[in-house]
Image (cartoon, rainbow, N blue to C red; front, side, top):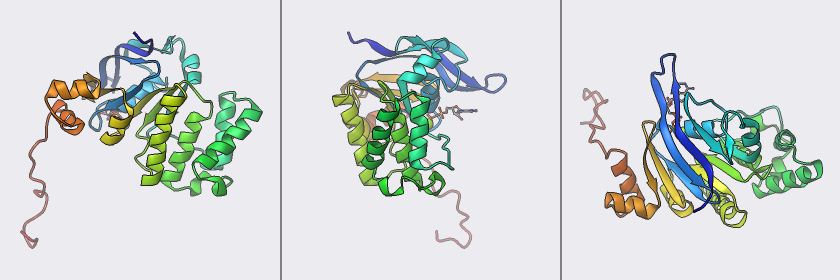
Length: 263
Ligand SMILES: Nc1ncnc2c1ncn2[C@@H]1O[C@H](COP(=O)(O)OP(=O)(O)O)[C@@H](O)[C@H]1O
Ligand SMILES: [Mg+2]
């Protein structure tokens, strides 16, 4: 049996004074060392909340968890030093250049100076940003910023990586590169990876196991084959739709006034 890198017990997060919004409801989940785990679920299901909890960015309102053997509350410093996070809507220091930002992030993680210099240079080249490395991030496009943020998540070469919607703002070539990078990190660098993505072919290609969250609850977990067998479907897309409640028939053009409009 593989060792658990992440283990949660009834991990919960509510928002609002009376806890009206249940963002994550009693999550029990294990992610094993060296596996790539995909987190799927509709918008607002609780994926980002889970990722933020496991990176000690927000505190749980219930339950507990360990990451790399460290307690989520007591061991938050240790956890932060061993995780790399590509957040869904991260803050970025717009008045720094890409080079300065990566150097800054590396220094925060205590990467030794000589290692940091070469690593910064190599990551900037990997993402094709070399000619713009000294330009301020405020002038970068969304996809370019995303590349810098992925580089920043890798700068301290941590054993555990979280990618929250990594390819959503990238052009097709860059998305393919990032997918291959995640694959390489898992297969050839021994990383444990948690990835949230709606791009099912990416999930299918990369993930050893998948968890599906719906309305804050983990409603399915297993390999793709296990999810197909459980639902009796032949594609991950069909299994996902089945598990998350099926497609609801809607009058998609009901918002249009018929008066004057083409019927
Ligand atoms: N800071 C916040 N304040 C209030 N509600 C929040 C906050 N962050 C997340 N939520 C709510 O928690 C639920 C889960 O959100 P999230 O984890 O971002 O979903 P996902 O990443 O799966 O799309 C949603 O209902 C969302 O509105
Ligand atoms: Mg999200």
